[in-house]
Amino acid sequence: MIEESFVRLYAHDFIQMAVKSELGQDVDAALQRRLAEARSHAALMDARKGSAHLTALIERIRDEAPRFDGRAMLRGADPSMAAKRRHRFLKVADALVRPMTKPSSSLRAISASTRNR
Image 1 (cartoon, rainbow, N blue to C red):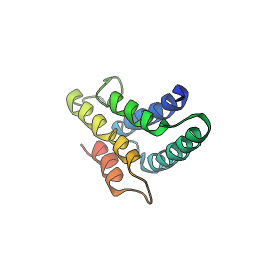
Image 2: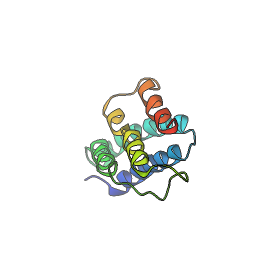
Image 3: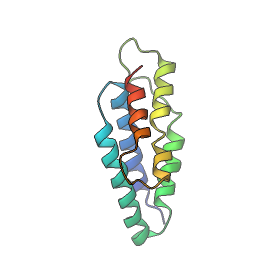
Image 4: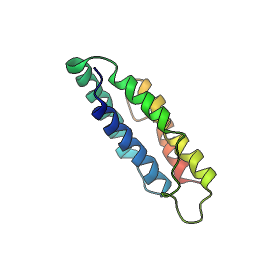
């Protein structure tokens, strides 16, 4: 059985990183670290509680990506562009699908593209 708390924890963390990136903070190192932690934690949860934890997390992130709350924006930012940047940032779901061997340049590009308007 998939543990909802696992999915909620990591989805929330990635969403908060999207917000921080939108506000101009550098989240590259934290993003890489959290991706690795999510993968290893998912493997542990699969071994102890049943399979598909990583799949459930990926689905949750993809569900949350289009939802946008304009409260976490820089003053004067265009809400539609901020929503697009958030959605682009949350492509981390795609990165979770692929096994990670080293920091992905595409993830750095995702994070940088959200900061460089």
